[in-house]
Length: 311
Image (cartoon, rainbow, N blue to C red; front, side, top):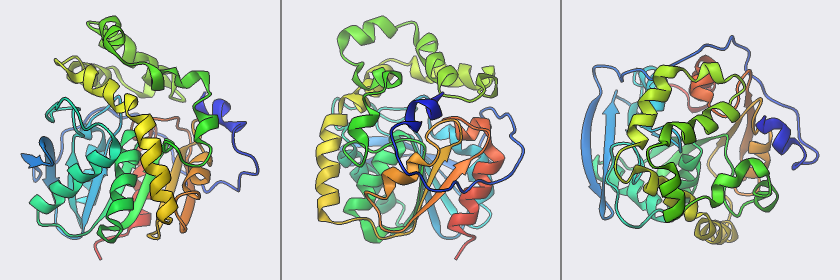
């Protein structure tokens, strides 16, 4: 569905780098026993953070409709040779919900504070959706702290074809926020979230009932939808900040831009070439937007191949 939406946006797309592999259904899995959870005070808020493994650090940032729990299969594999850090973003999951600070530049500072608290100077980044936007802000402001950067299936406000992308009727939720939007969704969080899981997947059945129930419960917590809407409300400010970042220069660390075959596809790399100078294009086959649910095997293999084993 998304692929049809965005195919007309980008002209002259280059060839797709696709990883072969059979898709596999997935649901929320617990993190390995070696992981531990802590609440880390950072930048005026407190984040719920999972850490585990040993070796070079890698930070995994989630997006809307999920929490850091989405990364459990990838974290389990990476922990063999990496120190894996998986926060819930400000206002989401089990992190605190402050009244402000949902622009992605502020949240980039949240991540810097987490790394400082863990005494980690430099890390690889793997991000999805809102996580892309937070990760980009972090990388733009702290380029020396990011070794390699993987961004998955979502645009960056204000960068590249953003103005064309936001004209898509499928993205009406970018402007859906405020007290009345919250009243409409209150008590109906599952219905609202089902819309994303159904319409933005290649096969809605791959986003299992167990996963839907898990995330719907988290998003039904007091203040959770308000904080989520604030993430989208901040896009106008994010666009201003991102244009300023690009004006200062492109990212120079190696970037892997991944799109779901039935979602952003190679458009993801097109977006990132406006913001980074060393971009590798890749596509997750047999997947829409929800790559860790729709084709976790291919996603894990692609990320591990790019960031490498512990260096």
